[in-house]
Amino acid sequence: MTKSKNILCFAAVAALLVGCDGTSTAPLLPGEEPVEVFLTARIARTDVTVTTTKAGDFIDNGEGFPTGAEIGVYGLREQGGSFEEAHLVNTRFTAGTADASNATPLEGPKIYFPSGTDRFYLYGYYPYTATPTYTEGAATIGVCSSLVDTESRPQGYATDPLYTGATETIKKVIESTEDGEGYQTVEQINQSLNFQHALARLQLTVKLTEEAQSQPAPTLQGVRLTFAQSQQGRMNLADGSITPKTNEETTLVITDLSTVLTTAGYEADHTVLPAEDGLRSIEIQVDGQWFTAYEQAYINEPVPFTAGTITRVTVTYNPSVSASGEITGWSEDETEHTFPAGTPNVP
Image 1 (tube, rainbow, N blue to C red):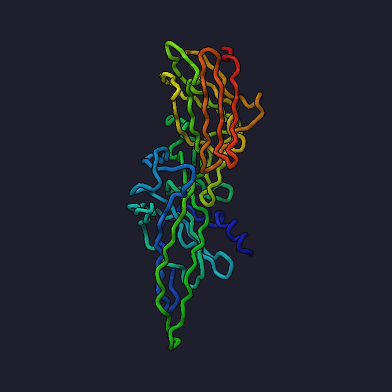
Image 2: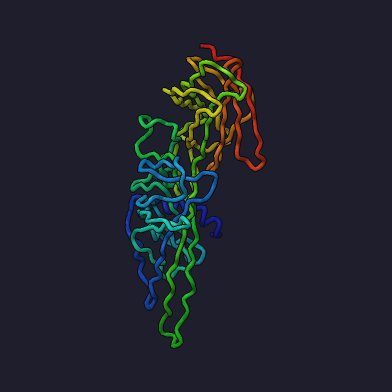
């Protein structure tokens, strides 16, 4: 089996072991010194900067895990190009205090390098759960957009899960002593797990156009977003891939707003499931009337959401005209799309 194939099957093999929670006390070869592995964690510096709360949200600004955050780690040993057996199974670690470079030490059971093994693989995920679900060859946890209200959100679903993918950990060569009877001591191994965001991020702004002059100022009462797929799903713990619950259109509404619109506007920040075809429509309710700012059926231009990046959506409203939508994706070419609104929606 080739190395690439090994990495691809890593999740399936580890998933068979879901539910065990213990230490990695693999037996040592005669005369071999234990090589301890010390773990640190980092959150990848992408367009999304985050901090955690007990609910698992990452909407506030920040770049590291807070002290005490619970993180799950899997490990699988390899020898001669093939995976032999599990070495670390869904083991819980807690984040210590991050240093100045935002490297967070992970505190938990000691990990010793598997005896007789030249390398093994680690992957981590957040937030930790003691009972992931085994589905179609992989261990998964439930995830959903932070737009899903807490009453509709299934218990334990993460609104901004993190994952690392498989991280190769290599043991330094153990050299024989001069008399050939023993082994020299091998230094400990320091391994950093680099966490990435599995969901995308949507920043929404609704504001008056610069030329708008209106007395009294209009009031934003609601925002209605229709997505091309469900905003609930499952995350593969090994590679961070998301499978939505369904591929049917899903409408989520931000209600009970009473924001007086200005040229600065209303701002909201939410996580959403990644998709090449993300939004189907954007509607806003102003002074009791709904307006359409974007509708894919007429524009024929999809709005994608990419894991670990931000899509900015700005809706401008002119009381004397209507509303319009401007979608700005943080893509390499920084393309911008402006969508003029239609007439107010028919009741």
